[in-house]
Length: 370
Image (cartoon, rainbow, N blue to C red; front, side, top):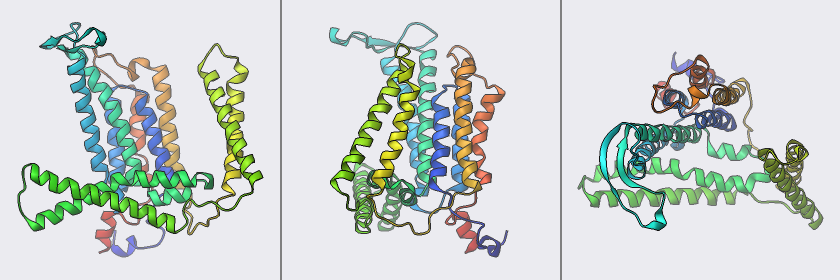
């Protein structure tokens, strides 16, 4: 592919941020419904391949490495906690540690003790599940532009969306700040080991990331992000009443749906009514926000494929967790295996890597154009 082909309009564009989040939430849902290490590794591999193929050249596109390190640290800590607080005599003892006696008010908690292979595997399985969810969230943050995501939220949620965008951009800003501070310190020279270097590295990184996030918040506030227009007291009263009724209906419906002894009329009907009233409340509240959109993001076939992939993976993961319990939740005393359906759950998530366009600011594309 030549540089002229890469620069042709329509071949490269950024995908809608909500499509990436729908895909990531679907994979995270499937990962949370299983402890099979093989399936979890497949999900994490699918997420990593999609990020490597479709990440952009923006600072948030380089933050996936931090999420990967956090996921690896999570697995290690989960196993360490199993060793510290999960001592048990049942199973194949690998390391016989002395148990530390605890006071009577800590009854039921064990500190150290015999470490069995079953306990380590259980900690590893739980850690992998949490690590897969972290990677899915990190993939969404690395692929979806947070500023464009803010422009896609409903007007009624614009103030909340502004705060969430500022909070979400702190972690990508840390990755970019760490890269720039490391390059600056390498040019200055000096000590490269010890606590002093760590202090000289962490303080500028945290300060720079916080300043850039606050600058983003100030810039968004200057441009009118999250500001509401004028509304009469009657309109505010109607909006507040609708949202309060919606919250009550959703809470009652959710409780009745989870409680099998509650009347069925309070379950799905009340939950559906609460959702309908919530939509009406959001529409009413959205009229107070006066803003315009410049170049709204299109929703085309690649967006539908990406969001549909997340939905299919979530549904298949739920089906495997309920119909193939032995596959979804293998015991620690047997070797885990994958059924064809579970293998499909782990592999189908790679589809956005080939069904979506290359981002306009992708590093590979920028090098080819140059």
